[in-house]
Length: 345
Image 1 (cartoon, rainbow, N blue to C red):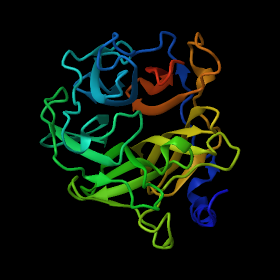
Image 2: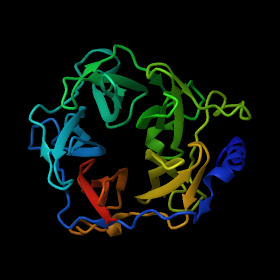
Image 3: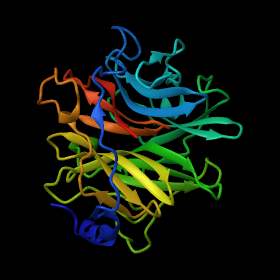
Image 4: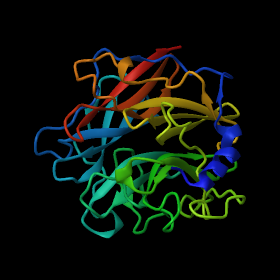
């Protein structure tokens, strides 16, 4: 049973999380030649899975950053490039950014969230000191002159999970970073407590003036644990709904005078992709037609219908076509690839 304070939070956020029909996201169709990126050969750094696509369109090239994992449990950030958005070639220098057995990111590093700055590029990533397939408690920062690197990491994390008893005391997983018109930065992240329970993962937000010192969003009306120090800005839906168990890995982007979000939702029996909009990036309205993309929409149904993991969305809007990149579980333990769906303008 949920804590009474959670019901208070639900009431406070009702206006921002209700369903609506103010606008409709594109109708996506799965690419018939999916997947567009697969794990590497046995023994390689990404031989188990490739996941968490993050895309940058730069100088007529699509740069797809992804998190790769191997059988040994080590995870790192890789890069693949494409001219058309469908046919990708992995970078020969992969992994682009990998753990080096020192510091707070000793064993796990990724996914890579990319931001363009005047002096080059910035990557924010999750890190973990243990050899397990779970997100860690720290967010690191790295910089590079070119997207292909070399990338240089900071010695200390720039953001960490909450104190014991807080809603995000287990892990903090960055999923979107942007610069606003006033020059400040905004980060959206997934936070949660016990990863093994796979429940009550929410979307949090943090702000920064310099990209180094971050302050989590904190609603002053919630003063007790688990929302004493910070509050999520987007929580799971009503109990029994398609995203009623957890929401996570949200791709948030500027859209007109507000923000749009593609996010992963789960019932505990499967995962799908939903859509929401916001004027201020704090109070969100769900699209009434959610989920907007799920397992049955994939053009490749060669895998078992019992596999219902379609997650980690990233939306790319180009002149003539819209891309929705996502992670797809392939049925092997923890294995998976990256796929794409499209909508023509």
